[in-house]
Image 1: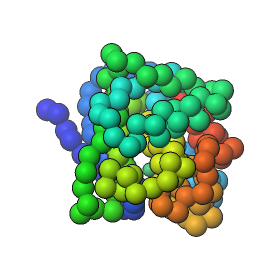
Image 2: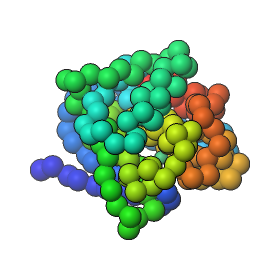
Image 3: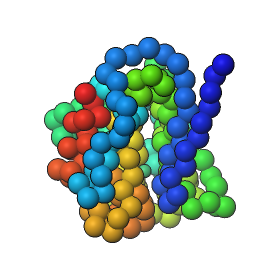
Image 4: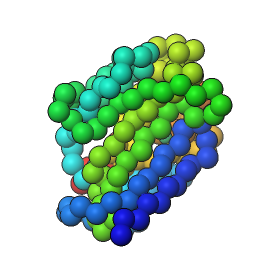
Length: 187
Ligand SMILES: [Zn+2]
Protein backbone atom coordinates (compact mmCIF):
# COMPACT_ATOMS: atom_id res chain seq x y z
CA UNK A 1 0.00 0.00 0.00
CA UNK A 2 1.30 3.41 -0.85
CA UNK A 3 1.23 5.79 2.09
CA UNK A 4 0.90 9.48 1.47
CA UNK A 5 1.69 11.99 4.18
CA UNK A 6 1.77 15.73 3.79
CA UNK A 7 3.56 18.08 6.17
CA UNK A 8 2.97 21.77 5.77
CA UNK A 9 5.28 24.33 7.31
CA UNK A 10 3.24 27.34 8.27
CA UNK A 11 4.65 30.43 6.66
CA UNK A 12 4.95 32.14 3.38
CA UNK A 13 6.98 29.30 2.05
CA UNK A 14 5.80 25.80 2.68
CA UNK A 15 6.94 22.36 1.73
CA UNK A 16 4.92 19.22 1.31
CA UNK A 17 6.42 15.77 1.45
CA UNK A 18 5.04 12.66 -0.17
CA UNK A 19 6.23 9.21 0.68
CA UNK A 20 7.23 6.59 -1.85
CA UNK A 21 9.20 3.38 -1.95
CA UNK A 22 12.35 3.20 -4.08
CA UNK A 23 15.65 1.80 -2.76
CA UNK A 24 18.67 4.10 -2.33
CA UNK A 25 21.67 4.38 -0.05
CA UNK A 26 22.78 6.99 2.54
CA UNK A 27 20.02 6.82 5.12
CA UNK A 28 19.31 9.83 7.36
CA UNK A 29 16.90 9.02 10.18
CA UNK A 30 16.45 12.43 11.76
CA UNK A 31 17.05 16.05 10.91
CA UNK A 32 20.37 17.68 11.75
CA UNK A 33 21.11 21.24 12.77
CA UNK A 34 18.77 23.69 14.49
CA UNK A 35 17.53 27.27 14.38
CA UNK A 36 20.37 28.08 16.78
CA UNK A 37 22.98 26.57 14.48
CA UNK A 38 21.52 28.45 11.52
CA UNK A 39 20.64 25.46 9.42
CA UNK A 40 18.29 22.50 9.54
CA UNK A 41 18.70 19.64 7.09
CA UNK A 42 16.86 16.40 6.54
CA UNK A 43 15.91 13.80 7.28
CA UNK A 44 14.75 14.02 3.66
CA UNK A 45 17.81 14.92 1.65
CA UNK A 46 19.33 14.75 -1.85
CA UNK A 47 22.24 12.43 -1.04
CA UNK A 48 23.90 13.55 -4.25
CA UNK A 49 25.61 16.69 -5.51
CA UNK A 50 24.29 16.80 -9.07
CA UNK A 51 20.69 17.78 -9.84
CA UNK A 52 18.82 18.46 -13.06
CA UNK A 53 15.63 20.37 -13.71
CA UNK A 54 13.17 21.10 -16.45
CA UNK A 55 11.33 24.39 -16.90
CA UNK A 56 7.70 23.66 -17.68
CA UNK A 57 6.19 27.04 -18.31
CA UNK A 58 7.37 30.50 -19.24
CA UNK A 59 6.42 33.01 -16.58
CA UNK A 60 8.25 35.58 -14.50
CA UNK A 61 9.98 33.04 -12.25
CA UNK A 62 11.98 31.43 -15.06
CA UNK A 63 15.01 33.66 -14.65
CA UNK A 64 14.94 33.32 -10.86
CA UNK A 65 14.98 29.52 -11.06
CA UNK A 66 18.06 29.61 -13.26
CA UNK A 67 19.76 32.24 -11.09
CA UNK A 68 19.01 30.15 -8.01
CA UNK A 69 20.60 27.10 -9.60
CA UNK A 70 23.71 29.12 -10.43
CA UNK A 71 24.04 30.48 -6.90
CA UNK A 72 24.14 26.96 -5.45
CA UNK A 73 26.61 25.90 -8.09
CA UNK A 74 28.77 28.85 -7.11
CA UNK A 75 29.34 27.16 -3.75
CA UNK A 76 31.54 24.75 -5.69
CA UNK A 77 29.84 21.81 -4.00
CA UNK A 78 27.00 21.00 -6.41
CA UNK A 79 25.96 21.15 -10.05
CA UNK A 80 22.41 22.06 -11.04
CA UNK A 81 21.76 21.75 -14.75
CA UNK A 82 18.76 22.34 -16.96
CA UNK A 83 17.79 19.25 -18.95
CA UNK A 84 14.77 18.60 -21.16
CA UNK A 85 14.78 14.98 -19.97
CA UNK A 86 14.82 15.81 -16.24
CA UNK A 87 12.04 14.45 -14.00
CA UNK A 88 12.39 17.45 -11.68
CA UNK A 89 10.04 20.24 -12.68
CA UNK A 90 9.84 24.00 -12.25
CA UNK A 91 6.25 25.15 -12.49
CA UNK A 92 4.26 28.34 -12.21
CA UNK A 93 0.74 28.74 -10.93
CA UNK A 94 -1.55 31.59 -9.98
CA UNK A 95 -3.35 31.72 -6.63
CA UNK A 96 -4.23 34.97 -4.91
CA UNK A 97 -6.05 33.21 -2.05
CA UNK A 98 -2.91 32.00 -0.27
CA UNK A 99 0.15 33.38 1.51
CA UNK A 100 2.39 30.89 -0.29
CA UNK A 101 4.90 32.50 -2.63
CA UNK A 102 6.57 29.29 -3.71
CA UNK A 103 7.01 25.71 -2.56
CA UNK A 104 9.04 22.60 -3.24
CA UNK A 105 7.18 19.29 -3.14
CA UNK A 106 9.12 16.08 -3.38
CA UNK A 107 8.85 12.33 -3.21
CA UNK A 108 11.38 10.41 -1.15
CA UNK A 109 12.35 6.93 -0.13
CA UNK A 110 10.70 6.13 3.20
CA UNK A 111 13.56 3.88 4.35
CA UNK A 112 16.49 6.15 3.53
CA UNK A 113 14.79 9.57 3.30
CA UNK A 114 16.57 10.24 0.02
CA UNK A 115 14.67 12.59 -2.29
CA UNK A 116 13.68 10.90 -5.53
CA UNK A 117 11.96 13.66 -7.47
CA UNK A 118 10.98 17.27 -6.81
CA UNK A 119 8.75 20.00 -8.17
CA UNK A 120 9.42 23.67 -7.44
CA UNK A 121 6.33 25.82 -7.90
CA UNK A 122 6.18 29.62 -7.96
CA UNK A 123 2.99 31.57 -7.36
CA UNK A 124 2.87 34.17 -10.10
CA UNK A 125 0.37 36.21 -8.13
CA UNK A 126 3.29 37.22 -5.87
CA UNK A 127 6.26 36.67 -8.14
CA UNK A 128 4.91 39.08 -10.72
CA UNK A 129 4.89 41.89 -8.16
CA UNK A 130 8.47 41.42 -6.92
CA UNK A 131 11.71 42.93 -8.09
CA UNK A 132 14.01 40.56 -9.94
CA UNK A 133 16.32 40.70 -6.92
CA UNK A 134 13.63 39.28 -4.64
CA UNK A 135 12.54 36.70 -7.21
CA UNK A 136 16.14 35.53 -7.32
CA UNK A 137 16.27 35.23 -3.52
CA UNK A 138 13.12 33.12 -3.60
CA UNK A 139 14.38 31.05 -6.51
CA UNK A 140 17.60 30.33 -4.64
CA UNK A 141 15.72 29.45 -1.44
CA UNK A 142 13.52 26.87 -3.14
CA UNK A 143 16.56 25.03 -4.51
CA UNK A 144 17.78 24.61 -0.95
CA UNK A 145 14.83 22.30 -0.26
CA UNK A 146 15.91 20.06 -3.15
CA UNK A 147 19.14 19.37 -1.27
CA UNK A 148 17.29 18.71 1.98
CA UNK A 149 17.52 22.07 3.72
CA UNK A 150 14.49 23.13 5.76
CA UNK A 151 12.97 26.53 6.44
CA UNK A 152 14.22 28.67 9.32
CA UNK A 153 11.78 31.02 11.06
CA UNK A 154 13.70 32.67 13.90
CA UNK A 155 14.32 36.36 13.28
CA UNK A 156 18.02 35.70 13.90
CA UNK A 157 18.07 33.65 10.69
CA UNK A 158 16.65 36.36 8.44
CA UNK A 159 20.02 36.58 6.74
CA UNK A 160 20.14 32.89 5.77
CA UNK A 161 18.95 31.81 2.35
CA UNK A 162 16.73 29.24 4.07
CA UNK A 163 14.79 31.87 6.05
CA UNK A 164 11.18 30.86 5.47
CA UNK A 165 9.53 34.23 4.90
CA UNK A 166 10.27 35.11 1.30
CA UNK A 167 9.20 38.73 1.56
CA UNK A 168 11.54 39.35 4.53
CA UNK A 169 14.66 37.30 3.78
CA UNK A 170 17.74 39.42 3.17
CA UNK A 171 20.34 37.07 1.71
CA UNK A 172 20.93 36.71 -2.02
CA UNK A 173 23.17 33.66 -1.78
CA UNK A 174 23.65 30.57 0.38
CA UNK A 175 25.55 31.65 3.51
CA UNK A 176 28.24 29.66 5.31
CA UNK A 177 25.42 28.33 7.54
CA UNK A 178 23.32 27.20 4.58
CA UNK A 179 26.42 25.54 3.16
CA UNK A 180 26.99 23.57 6.37
CA UNK A 181 23.52 22.11 5.88
CA UNK A 182 24.12 21.60 2.17
CA UNK A 183 27.20 19.48 2.87
CA UNK A 184 25.09 17.16 5.04
CA UNK A 185 22.21 17.08 2.56
CA UNK A 186 24.35 15.94 -0.36
CA UNK A 187 26.20 13.17 1.54
ZN1 LIG B 1 11.16 27.12 2.12
